[in-house]
Image (tube, rainbow, N blue to C red; front, side, top):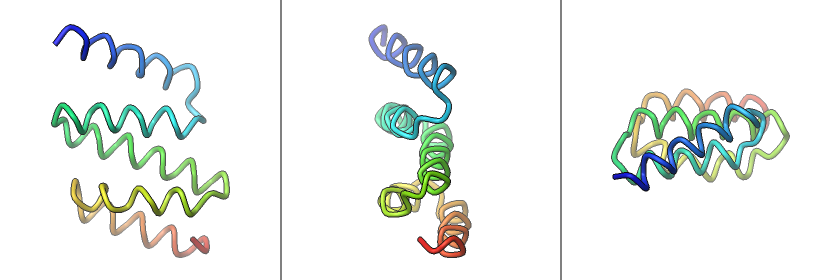
Length: 88
C-alpha cells in the first residue's frame, strides 16, 4: 500500500509538471488500472490518447482504445469517433 501511494504521488507530480507528456498519463493510467481505480484509469488513458492525437500520433492513440473499451465503452466510442474525424 505504501509503495502504491508513493508511486501515485510520483506519477501525479510528473503529470502536474509535464501535462503535455502522453507517456506520463499512460503510465498513470496503468497504475490506476492495476489498483482497480477504473474511472481514474480511464481518465488518464483518455488524456494520453487526446495528447497523442493532438501530437499527430493517432496510431499510438488508437492502441489505447482496447483498454479504454474495457473500462468505459461509451467514452471510448466517443473518443474513437473523434479520432476518425481527425484521420486516425
